[in-house]
Structures are given as structure tokens and as C-alpha cells.
Length: 318
Image (tube, rainbow, N blue to C red; front, side, top):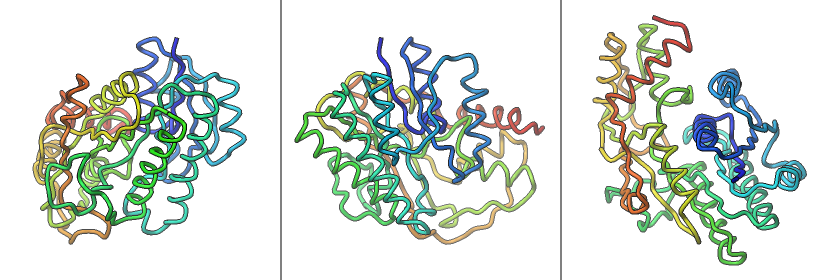
């Protein structure tokens, strides 16, 4: 039986990956520091409600704690790692660059060191579409230059990719960087657009629409993200960088329209210029992941419908 360590296990993607792994019979060990970047109550709820009835080991701690990381690997006899713990958010990284580099880079090094020492079979970690910066060529392919990040968050993720390559080259660690493209769905992060838009519309407050709505994304539903992560965890060897995103480019305007339809209310929009560190378009070339047998299945019409149903139930609103 495979035992998988998931860092950021109380997070949006981490908890969903944990559930999918346990559903197929794998053992799961989680680590999360339950920080207050967003409301820790939601993180606690993912553990106590979303994962209710499942058997797993949870460590409450920080991936920068070398002794704790060492203890987990030694005690739990981990086979594989899904490393998702990080300081998230492009905009917030402009305010706290030192923290982002400390957590995202040094924390990752701690895990890579342990992975080599304890002979981990496969190490998969979260990179980000933000590494592409202001690349003009779309869709973004893994072979495109990513040498000009425009936020500390993006730079930290690019650094992780480079350091991971070193651990593969020197130690032969099987390690894959997954570049996530705009993940959304039930149990999602409160700082993401879908949650912020929903809250604003429900409260009849103006929602902030940056770049005056002239933005597009590969919005990627959480179930598709999870199936992609598990595909890579099972199949990838050596060192690789892989895009994981939806197969349809959607405008921000349509994203809001679908949300309005599901809420039954129109949004009051506050049109604003582009924020520093943000980009107008992120579109993924997903051919590499498709070759492994993965494909996204959920369009925003269904994905947003599922999110709104969860939102009404979780926050007890009509």
C-alpha cells in the first residue's frame, strides 16, 4: 500500500487530493500549519467536515521546521510526496516578499532533502501558471521561456522548479512541477475571485473587476486538478514540468455571467485597472498531460453551479 505525504493538507487542493487518494485505498499523512493568510476556520472545516469519516494522520506544523519534517519522514515511512504547502497569492507576495521566499523556497528545500534521504519514489509539487509572467505567446507551453517573473510569488515558484531539477540531476529524485492554472470549486480559497465575487453579489456590494474585465483564464475545476495530480503521481519519472489547466479559454466577463445566472442576481461591477503582478491572460497548453491519459471534464457552467451549491450550504445562505 502506498503512503503519501501531502503538505498543505488542510488546503483547497491538498484536502481534495487526500480524499481521492484515500478513496482509492492509499494511506495519507497531512501536514499543515493552519496559518491565517485566510480564515483558518475553513481549513479546520476541510479536515473535520470534508474529510469526515476518513482515517489519516495530521501533523500541525510548518514545513520550515526541519526537525518536524525529519520526524514525519522517519516515523511515517512515506513512499510519495504531494507538496502543496506554500504562501499563496500573487498580490500578497508584493507586500511580504521575504516570507514568500522563506516558506516557498526554503520549506521546499527541507522537503527535497528529506525526500532524498528517505528514498521517496515520486515527488510532485505545485508550481504555478504565474511563472509565465507577461509572455505574449498563448497558449503557454512548458518549453516557453519563464525567465521574467513579475511577482515574488512567481519568482519563488520558478526557483522551486530550478532547485527540484538539481535534486533530480544530483540524486536521481523523481520530481515533477505542476503549473496550476486558476483552480476553482467547492471548498475553494476565500481570496480567489469566485469566492470574492459570490460574497459581493450576495451582499449587493460592488465586485472589483480588474483590467476592466479584459482578462481570460483556463479556469480549472478542482476535480480535474485532483485527477491530474494523481495521474502525475502515478506515472511521471525523472524531472518534468507539466501544465495542468482547463481546455477552454474563458473570459472573466463570461465567468461572472455564469455566476450571476447561478446566484439569480446581477453583479454591481467596479471596473479597475490591472493590479501589479497580475497578467491579462493565462492559457495552458496541456498536451503533455493529455499524453499521460488525463483530460479535464468540467466546464465552468457545471463547476460554478457546484460551487454555488456548496457556498449556500456551507455559509447557510439562500
